[in-house]
Image (cartoon, rainbow, N blue to C red; front, side, top):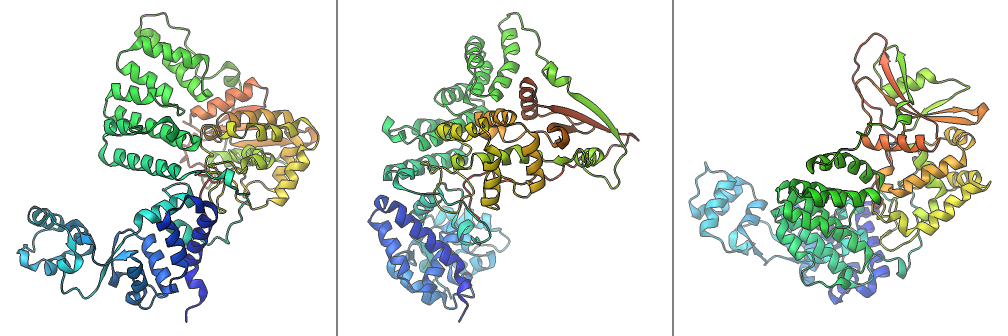
Length: 574
């Protein structure tokens, strides 16, 4: 008798099915309801075999290749699955599927009557036979003397639908969940109810699957025109009334436009971007119009974007496009914009250090050079401000909104990268940030630091945010500065979670701090770093750009330190 823990993957799979049954029972059809009920009634070896097959790439499996210690008799375990019709031994097998299941020596034995030359490779053998044997037929007809069975999973579509309803996406597979030790991590407990479900109707699930099929068509065939025509083919406006699905539709339109750009089909790219409201589509359309030599249209759209930019990233891009567009139309160019705002350029300082032995990242070298008891220095990069934001705004981040949480094992909301992430939670974030106008915000952050310790969060870097660092930050960073930093973070959560300066310096006796972006020899500021520096400079937040050079002139390898890790997906499992 094997110990129960050998079936932990089966236990996790059953938990997922139970979750789907509890939350989406009204969206399941008769076949799906029968599967949920029938699975729990199967013998344990049969359950285990089916889950093992669902975790592997199919749909065909050879019985002799399904070798698992906890399933001693695979043929016996398959019996109930065959009886249910969940796997099939008699399904028609295509020639390429036969080839995928066997090695070349095996194929020469199976196809001995076809006179194939042993010198041929598998691909050449397949090409020859496809000309004469195009018909699919059962495995037993291909290989009557087979010493083993071959089974086809007959519920792949059903399993995919259930997988979507559990994960909220199709890039996570069953193995990612059922093989996870869910006890390793601690997850925030989110209140799930009918109103918070992402899929409110069966049509919502159908819409997601339809979009997924179109994305696969785009990736596999590159036929952007067909995909663009099919996105709304036969679908009324009500099809996309679900805001979460509309975002996916908009993102697919963006991908179509990008595919058209790669193919240099500028007219079709412009059409795709014109129909797309996903961030980034507008500046891409301006670029496409420029490619078409439609400079007047491009300039008009650029000026519209300049007047009301969707983000400071778009504003930065438009500022770079405008001089070129004006020149193309023969109009006077505006004065060339400096690469950095003057106040940012003035924040540059230069430090000369002895080359560290052994070589180390320049951020660490400068941190150690400045470090003192009276002025402690920490390498934090994106960790500190994100963590303070994550603790203060914990209730807003983990609000049970539709499309945010699909199951109890998420590190954060699935819509974290969505353009409307902050807008959907505006009132909740306003309530959290309003705490910074009073006196109790430090206590709130400290209380959550203790109460939520170790709980998975897409913002809080538990490994970096030590009690010492937190205490110094709360003592030295004014609430007004945090509010400014958090406000910009909320303007574009996906884009503004990175680009923060590398170091933070504290002067506890003076209750002040400074953020420092570190650049070694040859390093340049990235666009997202420039945007943060400009913002800080414009709002009086203490920040510097420190350029380090080595005293002996030696060039060291520029290996950046490991950035404190944080989950960026928002919806992953353990």
